Structure formats: structure tokens, C-alpha cells
Image (cartoon, rainbow, N blue to C red; front, side, top):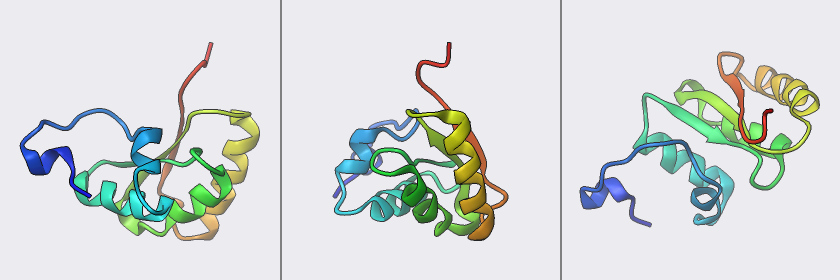
Length: 102
């Protein structure tokens, strides 16, 4: 798969669900994103299952800066995600919520 950056197209914004589903696996999408944005890797972890997404994101190690939840019960999910990140060496990662926050 090619990224926009490889074609000279400026890259901006956060990871989209369409990015995640364009790869063979969620982990692969996170790894490619980390390669594209090595200093600002924010993984969108709720395209499929937020808990598995948190586990996959934690595999990025220190490259992972943040995980983003875009749907569901943010309070409940963020508590579960925090435990998963902390248990898998990613306690440094921030948890961000987006979408319908009003």
C-alpha cells in the first residue's frame, strides 16, 4: 500500500477509520501510521474492537503517543483502555475522545 506522502501529497489530520480498514490488519495499519507519523502517532482504536485496538496500539511501544476513541461509552471504554495500555507497557500514552462530545 502506498501513502499520500510517497506521492508528495501533504499529510495532515488524525487517523481515519478508512485508514484502518484499508490494511490487512488493524496492527498493520497502526504500524504504517507510526512509520508515516513517527513523532505523533495517535492510533484510532475503535474501528473494530476498542479493547483489542488498545492491545494492538500498545505494540507500537514508545512510538505510540495517544489512542483515540471515536464511539461508544467513553468513560467505560477509557477505563478499560487505560488498564490495557498500562498492562502492556504503554502507560505513557494519552487517551483522547472525539465525535459527539456535546
